[in-house]
Image (cartoon, rainbow, N blue to C red):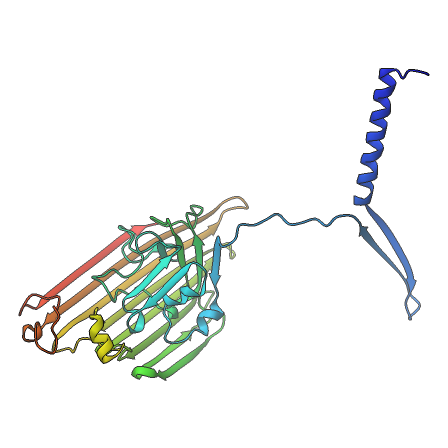
Length: 367
């Protein structure tokens, strides 16, 4: 019996390991091959390709539901009953509804976060009071509507706290960015007319100037009126939008201007005791001579946006903006019906006192 030297034994193990490694690696290699054939025309054709064998490469896993988008086509074909808030419910983790017409009393939950815990922006500028982070209509400002779908060319939805380029103030739930409607390259226009349930009527007009020396503009006006699916909740909304784009520096930079003026006026639905709903139906609301709240709101958003590509590593985006909100609410309750036989329920008002609440917000800044 012969003994194996330790050095020789180690060398033999290394040889076996290297052979095994080569045997495993060989099926994963790629081999080039060339095919030669003759076309019917008589030309000789050489086809060179690469044949891959072995296991398929898998793309790295991606986190789901981190970013969503609602495109221009979905906005263009949206129902007239939808607004800039309720259309968000098309995407996962968002629940949005309006209890009144034209977006009145809209409520949104975004990944279980509520108003003030996520941000809504237009071209990156926060909407609905940028100082306290209120992203949706509050209880006191029930018809504060900063924009409509007619002003929007697309919507970007970012779940949770994102990178600084898209993040907004207090965006625990996420950031919803409405992209401005852009002017078209060619001159043209359109007229829209519609009528539906609950005496809902809408009409609007859009006009594009096309390129005038490189400068493009779009003007639009839309009006919608409705008596509402809840009684005594009639509302009307007027929306004006303008966008202008001027490229410069050979197309490497551009200046954009956006203007939104939205005026809403109407009665808002109230909370009604369940026995009255069961008795009169789900559309019941207090008669106007019993109890009413009339709201008027005018919001203006103006933005000047300069985007410049300095070089392949550096780009700038500077904005100057103006925001104002003039909101008025008149609440009235008739004391004669406060505790009547037909209405034995307390109405939230102070006897025969008419309450008028007026608020105005003005914002100037650079972003």
